[in-house]
Amino acid sequence: MLTLYVNGNLGNQEVEISDGTTGQLSGIRIGGSVLNNNSLTIQWTFVSVGGFHEGFVFAGSFEDGMIIDSINGTEKYQIKFR
Image 1 (cartoon, rainbow, N blue to C red):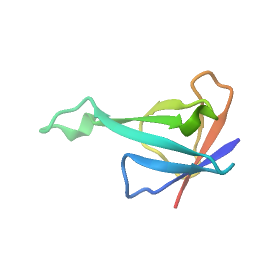
Image 2: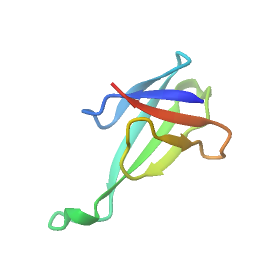
Image 3: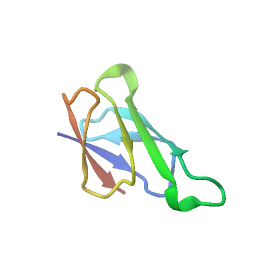
């Protein structure tokens, strides 16, 4: 399992992985509208810089310690807020 170190105060960002490599984490809003934020969801996409690891796509809120499977399930990422 790899740990993805995320700064919870930033949206799109370069993130450090526990094995010393890096990746790009991007979040975009999907659903909802300006008047109705109750149905707002964020879709997160992670891509490893240099292609060292398989990435993931996740929709929802990140929680410290949660585990996300990579796209094909070959790797697991634990989210750790800094």
